[in-house]
Length: 578
Image (cartoon, rainbow, N blue to C red):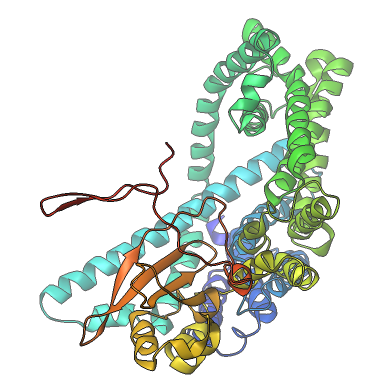
C-alpha cells in the first residue's frame, strides 16, 4: 500500500490546502473578502477542507484520475450547500447562527464518510457489498482519528519546545508558532504526513477495528438483555413514567441506535455465519425482531410533543432520526420474517440502501428542501396565528437563539404586525436582535454620546424637570460596550415626590428583555449619587413605556413600616406573600 501512495502529490496537496486556509483565515481576521460575504467564505472553506481530506484518505498512484472524477463533483456539491448555510448568516450584524454552522460541519462529515466508502468501491470496480462497506468505513474513521491524534501530539511537542526556549529567553519559536502563515500550513502538512504513515501500515487500522468489534461482540448480548427487560416491564409501568423524564423519546432512540450499531458490527459476514452460540444467537435474534417497537414508542412520544408545542429544530432532528431507525428496524424485521436465521441476506441489502439514504438526508438537511429552521419557524408562527399560544406567552427568544435568519425574518414581520396593538412584545423583538459579538456594535457602543442617550430615553413628566448635571451623572454611570449596546435598553427618568417632603425625587430605570434595574438619584450638596432600588415585577412587564404614557405612576405606601432598634434598621420586603 505504501508504494502505491503518490507521496509528492499528497504533500503538495496538503501544502496548497494550508496556503488557501491561511488566506481565508487572514480574510476573517482582517474582515476582508471573502470573510465579509459568508456565502463565499463557507463555500470556499468547505471545498478546501472536504476535497483535500477525502483525497488524502483514499488516493493511490493508480486511481488519482478516477478518484478525482468522483470527489470533485461531490466536493463542489458540498461547497454549494456550504454557500446556502452561509446565506443563512444574513444579516450578519443581527443574526448569530453558530448552531447551524456546527450542524453543517457534523452532517457534512457524515455525508463525506458515507460517500467515500461508496466511491472507494466504485473506483475498485467491486460489487458493492455490506461487508466491504463496513470494512472501509471503519478503516477511514480510524485513519482519520489517527491522523488527528498525530497532529495534536505534533502540535503539543512544538508548543513544549517553544516553552522550553522561552525559559531561556529565546522567544523566536513561540512567536513563530503564533504566525498564521506558519502554523496553518504546518498542521496541514502534518496531517498529510500522517496519512502517508498510517496508510502505509493499514493492518494497524484493521487490528484496531478487530479489537473494537470484539468488545462490541461481548457488549451486544448485555444491551439486548437490557432492551428486552425494558420491553417486558413496560406493559406494567406504562409510558407515563417514561414521558415524565422529559427525555423519554431520546432514551428510546439512543437504545435503538446502540443496538443497531452493535448488531451491524457483529453481523457483517455471510448469512450462514453465526458469531454466537445458539442460545445467545436466539436472544439477539428476538432483540432485533422487537426493535420496531422502539420506533413506535419514539414516534408516539415525538408526536405528543409536536401536538402540544409544535415543531422545533430539535424535534425535526428527532423525527428524521426516528424515521431512519424505523427503516432499519422494520427492514430487519421483514428479513427475519422471510428468511429466519438467514435474515442477514436482507440485512445486507437494507444497509446498502440505507447508507445511500442517510447520505442523501445529510445533504438535504443543509439545503432549502429540509431547512429545519424554516420548518420550525413556520410551525411556531402558525401556532401563534391559530391561537394555540397567546402573544404574551409566545417564545420570542427561541427565534433569535435557535432559528437564525429564518427566525429573524419572521420576527421582523411579526413586529410590524403587532407594533401598534402589542407594543411591549414589539419592543421585546426589537431588543432581541443585537449581536454583541459583531465589531460594528462595539464601534457604535464606544461612540455612544449623551445626545444619543437622551434621545433614546423617556422622561416623565417632562424633560425640563431633570437637570443636565443629573443626566450627565446617570450617563457616566452606565457602561456601553459590545455586550450592552444602546439598542438593547429602554431608559426612563421619573420625577416624583417619594417621601412627601414636597420635593421631587429622581428615579432612573434601565429596562432590558432580561432584567429591570432602578436607582434613586440624590444630590448631597456637591454631587449626584445613586441608591439601588429593589424591584417587584410579578407580571414580568418588559415595557414600562405604555404605562408611563398613560401616566400610570403613583407613590405606593409600604404595607409594613421599617423597624429601628438603635442604629439597626429592619425592612420588610414588599414581595413577601403573607
